[in-house]
Image (tube, rainbow, N blue to C red; front, top):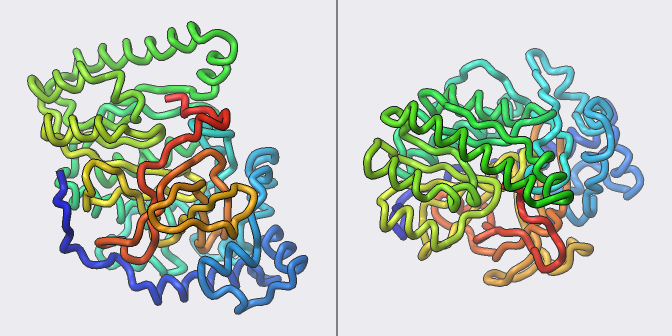
Length: 384
């Protein structure tokens, strides 16, 4: 596993990030450049260009973002309300709009600049307005794999959500293009599993068993060639015999996980007992992922936002000013700044984590330790 101390320098200049934030927010509320939603909100609250100078200003000036606009309206409606007119008019701009998978919560509409052409990652600027957000995430993911000692171009067995959306397709397409050699995929429709769980848990069990059967068949056929797993915390727990066989008799070299959380004890077994590098990603596609720190503190899993995202934690989901102190546990609130859209502060209802200080290459932002679902409040655990 990664060392407990890091020699990595910060991946960004915080001054550049602040300048980029102010520029994106000014674009968002400009009459000729912004999005109708943000323009209207700024007018209602008496906010002018230059009033927002940091992440705290963004949350407190604009207040908690209404999640229903991402849930209840069509993709086209969401696009016309949230996408910046400035970006839509930029030559070569390519807005990808889709519905999210709905794996751990209600499906939402997402707006993302996702250029499918290759770019020069070495010279990329995280805060160039012409750099699309999807490639920003790809570049950071590639550096993460290097930090965790995971080689590029492995052959992955991936279990990811499918269904009436394209978020998973973007992710897998980019992952295969820039990180993996090839991917064998096991499809899953999390929305069906949710319905099955409400009607009859046996139906859900049959579906999950069907997935496991497909996985076992693929492993038998491609056993020598599978060198990486791309899956979730819950499925890792259910697949230990397969993982052990791939490690002991095959050529398994890495595990990538996201979605439902991975238990700290499981991380310990995988990394310390089995000697596997394990890397995690947290969050929803509406914001882009948060990345696991390679600087381990015990077997906690610490996540930090990418340069165009921020996270803070609150003690009261209904009051985004109820920020907590380091070491305390609270509900995650996510923020996003990008050339294509700005999201001031969306409360991740039921996502609980411990607030931690910036560290290592993520010295520009606070982090969230061991995020998980608050099942005591009736929140639904991720379906897989």
